[in-house]
Length: 361
Image (cartoon, rainbow, N blue to C red):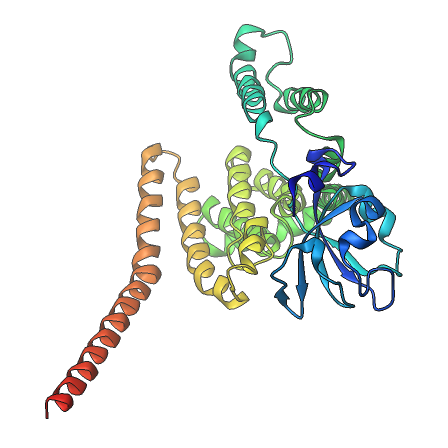
């Protein structure tokens, strides 16, 4: 594909993206080349490659005679998809390749300067301007985003796409449910149950911290961590007030428990990111996540219950936890893998030696 074909597309460079289109069974594209139908002029897109029966056709895209079922890789703008989604005569299916927009490297330096300026203002703003609301990351972040849109560093569509409405709706619903639980008295009932469990354990405030941590972890591994924190916050604070526990420590306990979503692939966004591409299964998260969950549960309860312990002790325990997980799970697997490779190499050397002896005879 020649560069001038791409330059003549009537779309801004940063609005273009890769699109996959399947040639319809009967239509103006079948039996003709992209050059013959005037593809760029007619559809406002450029053909980059053609795949046929799962294999790329090794020829200039403009010279390939298209057949029904061919998959075309196109460079096009957003208007191509909106114009041709219902165009069943030409394309049987159209889909955008995710995250295929070209990077705007010429905007990298301005973007970095704006972000650096934002962080500096948030860090030193309260010191230099104590009477101004310069410490709010939300306000400064919004202003930075507006400046980026004005200077074309971000497009308006990118700003809209960056808003994950599903997460916001889930969090909003969780706050609503939490308020309803508080007003209806359900939060108090659940808090009474947690206090009873904590007292039954006979460990004072540590028992309550452990019970709240466990309940929050269970919820956090099913829904998002933010929703779990919003649901459990009124319950945890109510329970802390009943037994006279430190509400700040209870908040720390809730924060740590809600963020410890290691046992399922659905508990946190990063779990889902590696779940498919890494070829993992749900049992893999249980295998690795459950011991980490139990150890963090115990350590968090111990640390929060002993406020006289120096802060560096928690860092030391965290380091020991990391080494323990490596020794228990990672190192044995690495040793087994190394041993198997050495064993296979030894067998291959033995077989080669036997063949060599046979040739000598």
